[in-house]
Length: 463
Image (cartoon, rainbow, N blue to C red; front, side, top):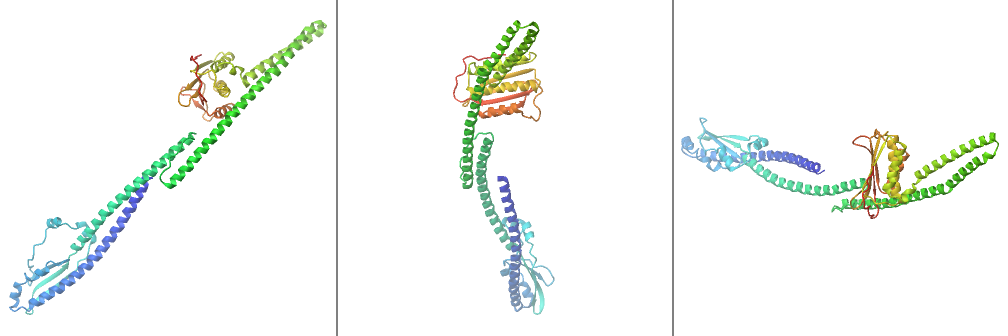
């Protein structure tokens, strides 16, 4: 912006200089022509008067001719006029020696190109000098624009010096002012980048320019409103996650406390029927035993499905077992169902618990990431790393990588990945699914830790 504005100013000044130069040259040409015409007319009258007086001198043409070289002395220094005298035979009568080019340069004056640019047309008058009725000399009075051109050149140079100085001062002032504006705009650009990164705590210092100061005030108000809205959303989302976990806990408790005893009673009743079938006739006892055995098998499958559902809804061990141990057991369960695949777990120095919502979110992220790696990526090795980053605001960083086929170019997010992102975002964290540099997929989850929690004394590392 600064370069463009200065360029426009320079272009305007250059155009103004061209127009001003054209006006100056035109005025100089007109003024020089008028001055030369007036000077030639005045010199012509003076020369004619001098010629008439010489013609009246007694003694004839010879005595008059002897005075020819001396009578123009009082006319030789007229401005804007050059006088040339020739005798009757056309021979020039020497006057003062003409100035050389070096003398003219030493005295200063307009350069030749400027004189040619002005280009005043020549104005000349020829005067015949007679004595005793006989012509004995000719005087040529010619206009010389050098003095007028020199005066114009001096005015032009003085004006150019002043104009250059003023323009330099204007350009310097514009450059400084635009530099300040550019610096203020740079603050807005940096602040907008902060907002783009969801850092709503950024603020802009009020510039000295009133208009930009008003924009800065509006920007700071917007950032404050966004920051407050984010805090409110974070509280609401955290509350929502907490309510979801409470609902899951209540649902799992009801499934365990209500449905579990019912299935146990159903299984016990079926087994008692098997015992009573022994007293029935043989043909009836066999059928009853087959039916009760099938019923017991159905109840056992229901119990197994109920336990899986309970673990999926909310692992009971989250409240009683350290987070690292729960995640390690989860990977061990995956390994038991598929022994041909490897599941590696690398925890850092962590606390036992980070709150019900955060523990449950990390558990769900690992569960969903490993499931996607097996189901969609056909991975043979899955590596899970969980660490606590240092800093003013510590964050839990979960990285799940695999050696599968990797995510597609356009990821169609299903319920699992969408739900995982929503849970992480509700806790103020970020969730990114990337392509691993070594092949496969890489899930990176970062969640801020609220409050200071002492880490575990020993670093756990399991494979």
